[in-house]
Amino acid sequence: MKEPFVIHNPDYVADIEEKLLRQFFMHLIGFKLTEISPGKVCGELVLEEKHLQQNYFVHGGVMATASDVVMGFSAYTLVPKGHGVVTVDLSVSFLNPGIGSVLYAEGKVVKPGRSIFFCEANIWVENEGKRVHTNRATSTMHRISL
Image (cartoon, rainbow, N blue to C red; front, side, top):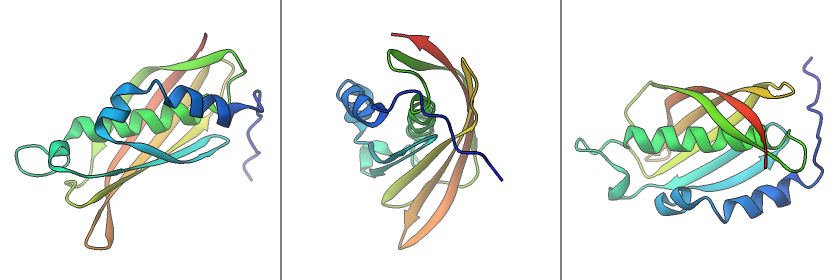
């Protein structure tokens, strides 16, 4: 059985909400967080034409951004106050084309450490009421002092 995550900052939700005000690229594309819990963050994006590539699939950069955001903030839930995280590496696997109206993203910490966090994300795109798993991503996040 997996042990619960250790919370080093009891104000992590409020701190994330404050940091979201300065997530300028996230605002530009319209991605919003919908769940913030220890070691897990979810978000969604109502898809528009600006999110698509030439074949009318969701652009890979949009999917990579959503993955990075949910993994980064999932790690952020576990760092002490006055610290943040930055992405060290990001790997995105494209499983199916993103065709639909809403993108859903879920990021989780797989293994927390003192300064390094291993994370994963999954992306689904809803099309006509059915969610299709479009991406799986992994990342390494590094804790930094702010």
